[in-house]
Image (cartoon, rainbow, N blue to C red):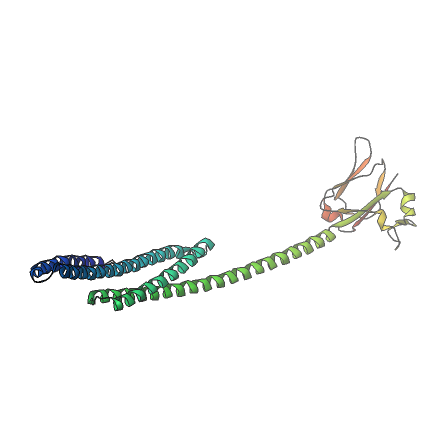
Length: 295
């Protein structure tokens, strides 16, 4: 609201500035009929009344200006809230809004107090100015409008806070679901990996005939027929990665059944045999135990 009362104040001040001149002229005209002391007393009394009215008017106009400045500060704070309102998800923006709402509430309370003081001053003032009363009523109406606007703004922000809180809950729930699924998938992957590792386990051993008999791996010419053969004598391998076995012997014979064409027995540069598996899946399809007799 523009400071519409300043021009009115100037007009009043001009009128008031004329009054002393008129009074002094009147005093001069009657001076011939009155004593000098009485004339001076009347003049001083009139000047005192004029000074009092001038002070009252200045006081009222100062209060009106303070109310107008309060409205301006409130409008500026509203503008800051509108800017921050575009990004409520930001914690800093929401903090700006809260600070400005608090600032507006304090400024509006100050304006309420100032308007109440203006009403009281006008009642006790020697003025009977309808224009000033109208100005104060307009200030009160403007304050009521701003109060309604701020209430609507607070309600709007409250709704958005609720929406954001709901969205936050939904995001938290989604994160919990994602974490739950991630953990579940992790456990499933570990289970599958463990099962896969178990499925791809195999065991091999090589040794002389005497050594194999001693471990009950070879008994009466049969291999792995004894129920109590020493499984700890075998070496566990992963058939996906184990491709060859160095036998460190110039003579080697496979005692367990493995399909032909899935492996080769070749000698290295020292003339010692090396078992190379060329088709792991087929090689271990008959038996997951490999027994090789060497000399």
